[in-house]
Length: 189
Image (cartoon, rainbow, N blue to C red):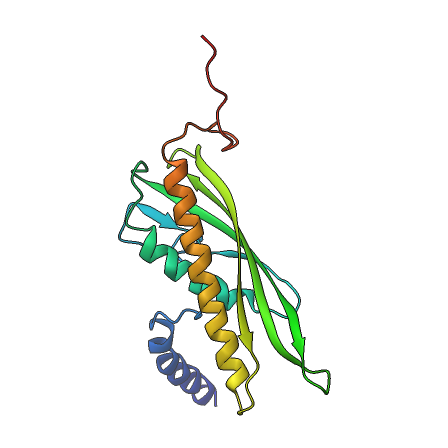
């Protein structure tokens, strides 16, 4: 009598064991437990922290933004030998145009990213913020609006990543306060 339940539990455990070892991770999340993803370059890109905004999907845009940052910043920036890049993303959708039935026909994704580059010892090497927007039209075909929104999120992520990279290049040549990341006051002689 007791053997039948134990046998079923054993079979269930053996069946589920391969699934536990498959390495399944969520599409727009995950990481190595500490929020830093494995990169091959000297600058590690942390998981993008998204501030939820009305009418938007910050996880998807954050995923696209991280991909762009890994491509454009992860291999290094002149002046920064190593570091960890942390980004906080916020985005909203603004309705721009309306159809005769008052349904939105054109909208903008407006995104802002605040970035901080930290050295391995925790000191701040640079900080800044970027704001961009990407427009999209609502299509007449089924699911065309979803494709348009996804393309706009990808464009927004690309623009934000390029803005962050540009600011990092500029910040590389300027001395900053290692505690706040603000520009250091020039020495008076």
